[in-house]
Image 1 (cartoon, rainbow, N blue to C red):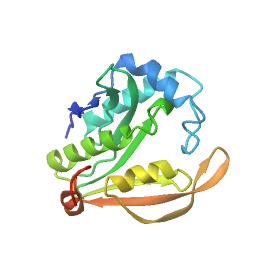
Image 2: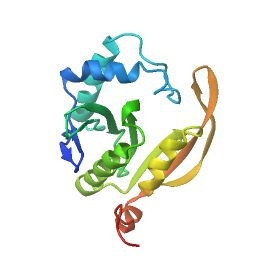
Image 3: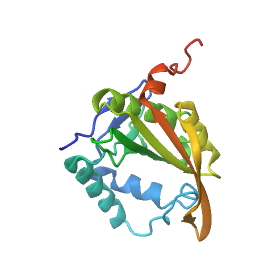
Length: 190
């Protein structure tokens, strides 16, 4: 089953299918050692990796295993990162959330805003029951994003990744459909 990568909009952001023209921005993002300091793969050193990322993103949608839209600011069309839902399981009605944003986008709520819109689409369109996410235990900003979205920390994977030559732990987060439906929107009265 094929999935079409959605084009979604928020007040400040547009999530859209990846395009060949995104290769330079993707390479800049993924070659930044500081931005990827908690990533489980080294920064890119060859631009061809961006082309592979684009190809893989398209293949995920065609195979029906996930979507990985890029995120750009509405105000100026600037590329600021990407989000993903992968792998998607229709049998278990579940997927994993991932995201990566450039440093200039940090601290502005863009990751939360983009992920919230992608989750809304996933729960409504794909009829998901569960979304999982993992983050390095040192990446407190990413943990805050997940918690703002309503994810619950479910456990710790001890020494599950090698990050920059260092063994690292990851926190596992889960978001269940019924919890998503009952969580208030940002700014809503509680």
